[in-house]
Image (tube, rainbow, N blue to C red; front, side, top):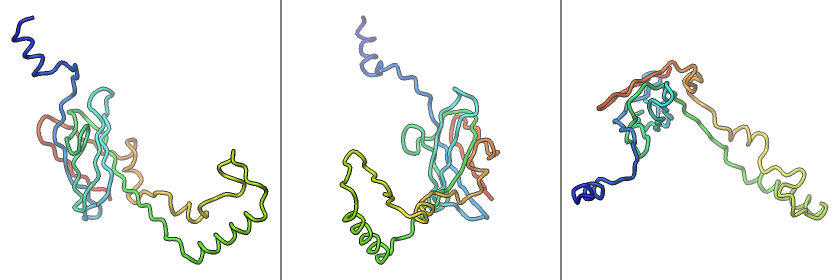
Length: 171
């Protein structure tokens, strides 16, 4: 093997990784003329094998910068279906009075209960959260539902070599 070839292999690497190049992709998401903060923007390749899925979360100005392999590195060239969703998960704070009553009831139930079965991590009747707390803890999409699915969003983008900007209005 010639020394020039050996030097090239050492400096250029021989990992065999033929990663598709990615190009900067950014834009703004607005709803009713105002920026949407905390929205998840996802680019999914329309044609299998052409492009790589990429995603981002909008900042307080509604601006996103897609990430594929590293933060804000962009997306591979190709045609994409775009989805946008913003999930609001607000669990109401527990009231101390309710927590104390629950603790008292648990203590009383434990005193009258059968011996604890160590093979069952959740004994009969165990529920850490009330139904209202469970319902409140489920994340809800606060944007129109059609934008959360590639089948209904009707949003597309074609990423090309160079810098790409795609703004989306989700009303």
